[in-house]
Length: 319
Image 1: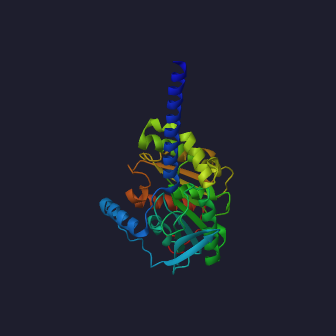
Image 2: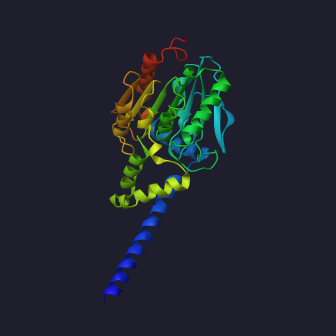
Image 3: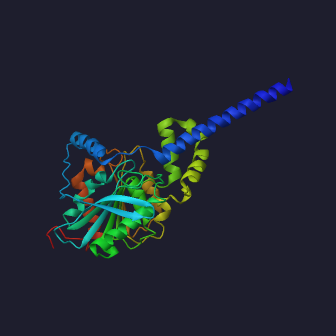
């Protein structure tokens, strides 16, 4: 009887182990290899969003130049827009998770009127860039550094004349790039997550239920091994410690995908002399602030630049 009982317990243990590993492999693959949009797909998807929200998809931009930027084995596909008005400035735009550079262009009008050149690129594993694991800023920050350096070389500008704007996944990447390029003009981070562990754990429970907590530790181990990154280093809230570049954190109070507490945690670690945090009450969904209330968003950015980067681009009077 005892031998039979031990056999049953062993079989149950093995079954639970198989379920644990199978589930962890599934969630790891979902984290690292989730299907992403192409440019045409995102244009169609966002076109519906713009129509629903009653906003225009006219970014006030000319036809961009298609460019490629290399970082090791990864080729980043990008679009470069040279401004006929020379404002002596440039801005790099970073898009959200599963999106493309097209989704980041909604931020271009904020700076195009200042005479800034614009660069937007598809993150690794996204759009037309090289297929690669998604590492939530770990390798993407190196790609962003390479793209930033490309923009410096193309424009001939000094780093303090080039800003970085990111939304969601792109916001987290922009903040994690700060230690690599601390002398950027500024970083605008819209709807960032504070670190990998926090956002993945939160989203797992939100999307699948509390039972996923049993799979999370093993999923983290498998993800690190497969993609070759240290998930504990994926941490915008750590990256801002000691940063001196001006940072504007914007987040919706009604963001249910990435709660505003993430931006608050980042702000808690940042320099209060150079960092501004704005939690808005516009009723926006995740990463939709600029679409919900563009005039106020534009005014916030103008106020931030006037206070922290007063000589960035042209002023409203064209000077």
